[in-house]
Length: 136
Image (cartoon, rainbow, N blue to C red; front, side, top):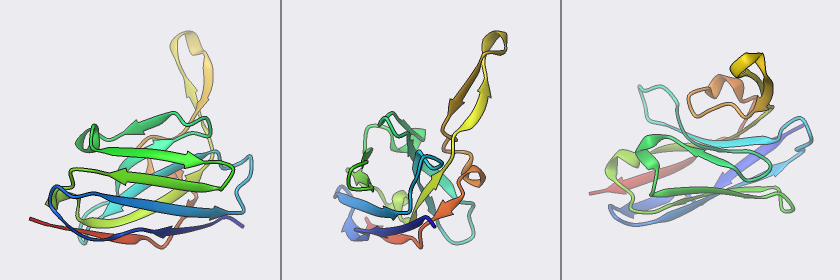
């Protein structure tokens, strides 16, 4: 049973920084992909960043250059370092884990990749969330 527990949220002024953590348990070979999503009331869940077991990251455009996703596989912990925070970053932040998905490239070549930031429904396991509030 995969369990994800986020921490590190809080209130910060615009321009400030926060570091989110996600402690994972029950992770196995079937859940190599991890990600951060965020959601504000009345809006759809938005992908922030994903990372595969090897540490290769992917970011949504709005956070590139400001946020850094990383993971410590030995400690089963996912991180999100958030710098230069803006009021638009205010949201509940969720940690997620999931399996690789099939991707067919040129000439029908098959590869296995982590679901992207726009594919939240491909992630099977979710934490309870941690609130981030940025005041201007």
